[in-house]
Image 1 (cartoon, one colour):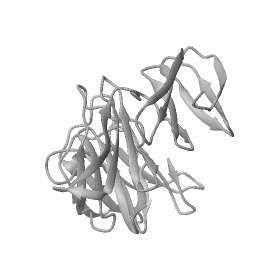
Image 2 (cartoon, rainbow, N blue to C red):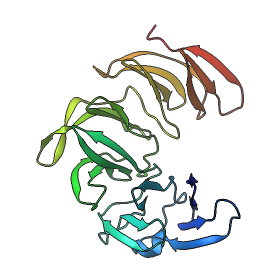
Image 3 (cartoon, rainbow, N blue to C red):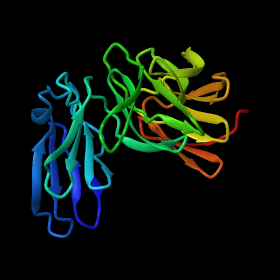
Length: 247
């Protein structure tokens, strides 16, 4: 859920978006984002935290009716703007300021798009998909560049949205298979990213795309960066503490 002093906003797996009084839980308003977009819910359920931007609440609904991304009035639930055509992903919308320009990042089933968060206008798009159109891990920002990774043999890539060619960001280094984030996100320390490459812990140099090491089978667990240590919770349940170094 996304929580403010005025409301708790929660998106359920079937596409029901609720705004609730944060003290009492009483309903303020409700929408079905799939109905609003004229889209089917994705196979494993709608996902992602609603994003607050100014007076709007932004979600990734998906669909092919120029309503894939919807901004609602956060106080009334009325639609303020809608845009785009893509399959919804499993990642939360977010805002990044790149080269002084606020950009709404939507990592959906067909790739990553940058939007004007005030109007929904698409600023650029980068195709990035896989067999099941599952993009889960948040894109990671490194100055003016964005690191993308997903599983199902997709791999990873670094792009620069401040350098566009035919409305597509330039690749800082080309896609490779050195890290495949499937159901989780990575963490970064300095110029290195640490994540579960299809369940095996790996370290990647984000400046070059080179993998520094790979080892330790944790399956599809989760990682936290704790100072200069990685706190790794494995899917079977055990926890490991690993040094966050390229060595």
